Image (spheres, rainbow, N blue to C red):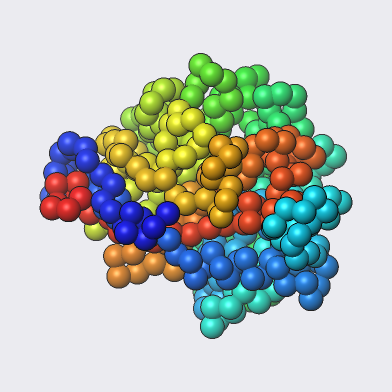
Length: 407
């Protein structure tokens, strides 16, 4: 996509200019402009292509990150390919870099960026072991917090989604539980994993809620967002939920409180804060950031065919009401893959450690759905034929008030 088109304004909706919150104004916020962040996209491509080691990351999705106290950045991925990347052409003469059909795959991984910003190493994989046969863990949002309330020692807390093998339409696994892993600093050793919410007792998998797709630290409180999975045509969008946890207590399930529509409750998973099961809602993975006191939620557009569009909502509170959706933008797909109609973007995630000066750095994952479900990874045959398909890509966003000129 030409840069001149990438930078155009993308929002043309009529919303309230803002709301009153705590005696002040919470301004309406939405995406005003965006542009590809090629430096980061190219950095992961170069790291994945490096054939110096066979146990290194060569591609993955479920992209999340957290800044460590010493300046390094920990990147977390769900399903991950390891092994060597070969130069084109591949066995079928296609002009792409490729992996062997039997390239190793693990359910999660961690990659560390040095203090200077260079992708440095892949942690031993999988970073989080499978809890049982037929089950696995996907890491999602992470934060650095005190080991306990008032402690000086800090640790990394990583939210995990436990999923289990299931029949169609659950080709990516049935939601099972939310967990929290504790990693020591500075060596990033997994000290332990605590279950926060076991959802296996909920008979309908579509009503199971997993937390951790995104989180927002707000003073002494961490807001953790989650959602259910919409797997049927009758539910084209998922619902968003939110919990709050005192800082330093993410690994304590008794400290979690869930918004039930009126108050923060100790029991259950709460009630949705966003989603009507139709055009208004979220994808199975979304992200939330704060801008000038306003919460902004970015997600793949509910019900969008082909997973083509990132849209947004805004609110003065994590519990809503959420205004939107806004008109979105279509993030660029790699190379020549967009024309065949089988490549999709998904899982938009903000990376606050990389933003600043009004910029939001957003990653998104890409995959080919032609071979969806092969060996547990959508389009595995295609992503091995073209390694660009299963690596994070990045854009830079700027938020504006919908009423501002040029928005």
